[in-house]
Amino acid sequence: EILAMASRPTFDPNQFARNLSPEEWKNLVDQPESPLQNRVFQNAFSPGSIFKIIMALAGLERSVINASSVVRCTGEATFYNRRFDCWREAGHGEIALREAIQHSCNIYFYNLGQKLGIQDIETFSRRMGLGVKTGINLLGEVPGLVPSEKWKRRARGEPWYPGETISVAIGQGPLLATPLQLARAISIIATGRVPALHLVELNLDSPKDAIPFVLPVDFVPENLEQIREAMWSVVNDGGTGQAAQVANFEVCGKTGTAQ
Image (cartoon, rainbow, N blue to C red; front, side, top):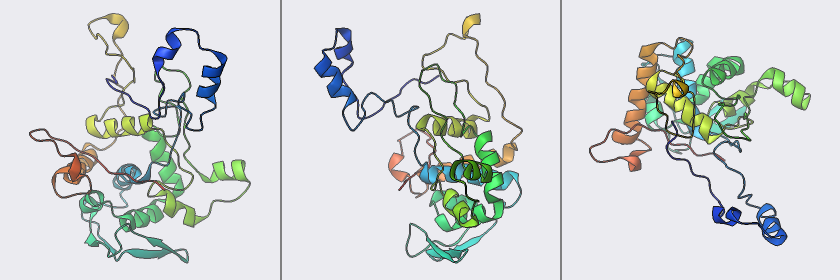
């Protein structure tokens, strides 16, 4: 149940309670900010560091990392003869998975992306609901984009280069997701279930409203719990999301900045 949804910039819905004049309609549709588009599900964006959550789960599920796998972050690293930077110029030092999520270390996830490769990244992104519509009961939803070797050959007539995987690993490059898709992905982490999304509160005592939760594809419960604990530390243990702390209320989170 989606209890709150907001998109900005917006418009005054009271205008539609009467007949709009041609001038009023033209003013709405011609605005460069496109206020009639609901950015929650009708626009897709680079997810940025929120995507590191999906990367972490993919790494654990594929057993290419575990909780104690350590990467040394000096603030920069070279992959395929190109330099990639961490957001923290001084680096994070030696860092394991929990701290990599807690402090959103780019270098850790660059290395993880290189280990996984674009095929595994695509597979797990789709298992987490990216690249496909959520099926919410609203019109105009877009599917976003999960890049792959096949997609690039079809869309751009070029091969996929390994260096592109490094950018995708931190939620950049051609990867696109709607805010709604990301909310659902985090819901999967939080609950271990894939929700059927509806914009209204449902009366589950009514047979017509009995919409089930569908179990995801056998994610290891311990792996989900590792991600949850790391997301708790993002907010409550000096991580990048500590501004989201709520007194006397447990909050988990993940910061994300996209270029």
